[in-house]
Length: 183
Image (cartoon, rainbow, N blue to C red; front, side, top):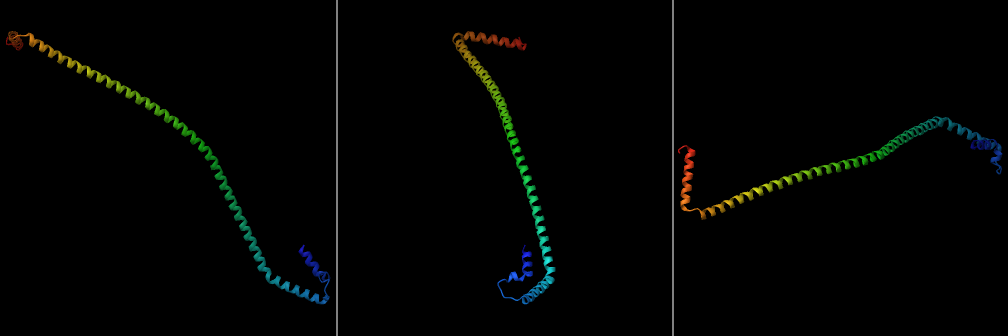
């Protein structure tokens, strides 16, 4: 659109200078001067401008490629993290289930161990009670025997005379001699 307007202004100078008193010949010289100046600029600037445009185009293309590569890497990283996050949820659920199962198993093991300990302690207590009862019985029997011997001794002392003691001593001496073969 700009090109068409510029061309129209150059071809129809009367439209451009409708209100001015510029002669056509003078305007032609100006137009020729402008064309000559633009031609020289185009001749000398064409290479660097084209090179700059090509470089700019290559730079833009490189930036686009880099941008696409980085976008793809970011998308891949996002997909990986999203998959890990979803996997983490299921892993967390399985860990919770495993922890609950482990807790139940541990509770059962503790209950079993407690029952075994109670049975062992009960058995040990019963054995201790039985042993202590037997020891107490033996002590009572021993005490009863000693008491009976003392009572018998006291009764014998009161009822046995000196002649009875001599006769018992003689009988004991005779029995000992017979047993030794001297009799």
